[in-house]
Length: 142
Image 1 (tube, rainbow, N blue to C red):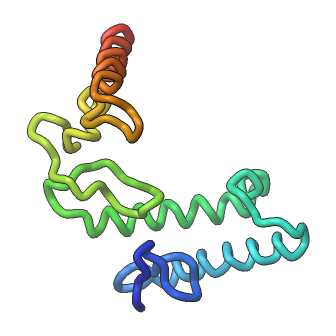
Image 2 (cartoon, rainbow, N blue to C red):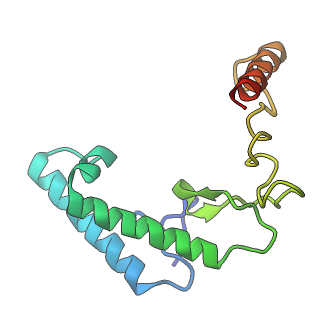
């Protein structure tokens, strides 16, 4: 398979894991069939809310997510950050920081809350003020 920049296999809409797994493929195909049927019947695209409202569809969806996480866990490198990024179906690529319980400095509890750089459209002063408010809120909650 060739992957698009978004990690999709042409024609499937979702990426196939390296080494492939028949179980994941079957789950993805069933979810795709349900999605297509929903769109034909209702004339609208399904959303996460529609999936959650149908117990069987939700169970299939959660099974796929658990299988994707297990596959990512199997390929996780020793010393890699333990933060799983579900949307990307992988763990954070950063190295775990010393003393941060297996997480990188961005995802470690207490360290990742401060802004590391100003968000687009903000000044450095606004970012510093937001960082101070975040730190104060974290201190107040402890």
